Amino acid sequence: MKNLALHWKIIIGLGLGIIYAYISVDLGWNQFTKQWISPFGDIFIRLLKFIAVPLVMFSIISGVSTLPDLSKLGRMGAKTLLAYLLTTITAVSIGLLFVNLAKPGESIAQEQRIKNRIKYELWTQQNDDVEILDGKSFLTDPAYADYQQEAKMALDEENQRTANDQTFAKRMKNAAAVKSKGPLQFFVDFVPENIFAALSSGKLMLQVIFFSIFFGIVLVMIPESQSKPVIDLITGINEVFLKMVEVIMNAAPFFVFALMAGVIAKMASTTEEVIEIFKGLASYSLVLVAALAFMVLVFYPLLLRLFVRKLTYSAFFRKLSPAQFLAFSTSSSAATLPVTMECVRDNLGVSKNVSNFVLPIGATVNMDGTSMYQAVAVVFMAQMHFIDLTIVQQLTIVFTATLASIGTAAVPSAGLIMMIVVLQSVGLNPAWIAIIFPVDRILDMCRTIVNVTGDASVSTIIAKTENDIDMEILES
Image (cartoon, rainbow, N blue to C red; front, top):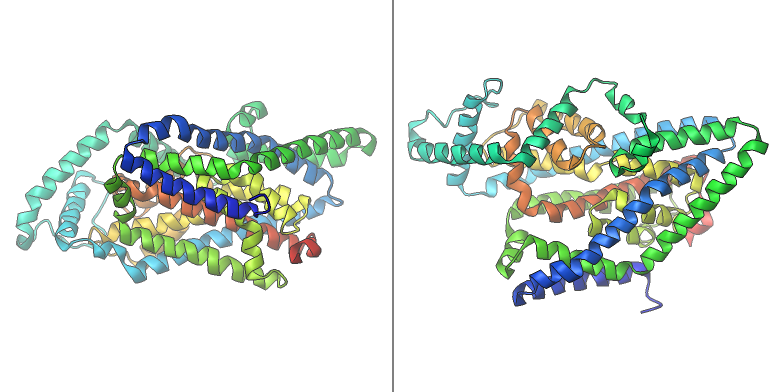
């Protein structure tokens, strides 16, 4: 086991965690698992998260302050934002292609789709600012008279649940705040009012990035006699945090085992529920996973081959796999960031100047997997309500999902807030987010892999275009 590569150890930990969780549920050990095993998974995520913020700050300051030419920073920043924007648009477009071809919403029983459609029309009547998208009417059609009263009762029950759901009300409030922001609000939010408040909150990573870049630039501008002691101190602190990541990762297989066991134990109390979690909404889940897999297994490797020809397909996944498996386990790009930085720097040969700048920005604003999930989920929910979205409406989804991925970067439960914003952009009921809750946790793990792989791919491409990559490490 000592000579086994880290990614294989993590895979083993993942597999054992899933097997143990199933046995635990079957034998009634759920309470034991939640109390005595799951906390180690929580500790693991906390360890990675508390390292992430200071590591981002000291890494960026160290990287910017050692740049030989500040013009390189502006050039690299423009390339980074453009690359992340293009990959996000591509991800949403691929998601729409998959969901339109597979039509997972049509796999639901016809009777249920009719009831869903009538509930949707009743909902539009209750909201004066919303119109029926395709102009059809099931509510006034005598052929569906048997379903209309039942649908009305079901909608009343849903409205009551929604009215009593404080969490949903909070998410709606956050979504309204995102929608009401002006075009330059993103840049306003970028600048911290209090850097110590930003450092103490993992939700304000953009502000930490701004402060770090500004601090690094000013270090370059002052005389070397004054900046050198500060740069040496920051470089030393950065190395300490990198060593912390290495120490934590040595125990990652055990922590991943505990994390997976705890996640599944909290999701289900019987073996039947475990099976239903994977069976429920199966068509939607399969389509989304297929689209996410296409991004990871086809799109990113092809993109890399265009810019970094000497990086083979198998080598890329072998070198990045520890970060990918950790992303699956933690469902958090921010928690995985320290390991992503280590993989990109030590395995792919990307310089510290590039990785320390590009990856923290990516972990905050680049949500390829999450944006794709918005597109697939919204069209799926429209399909299951007998709603045909036009090309214009689907282009609206592309535009809104792309902007929402940036606008909600610092908002709690960003994925769900994005979903509400996208649903509202095409006139659909935001309460439908409850439909995908049963499988959302598992799918969140999958889309985080896409986010992390996208960050690493863009970082490697930027490094190659800047001639700032160690080809010996890359080809090893």
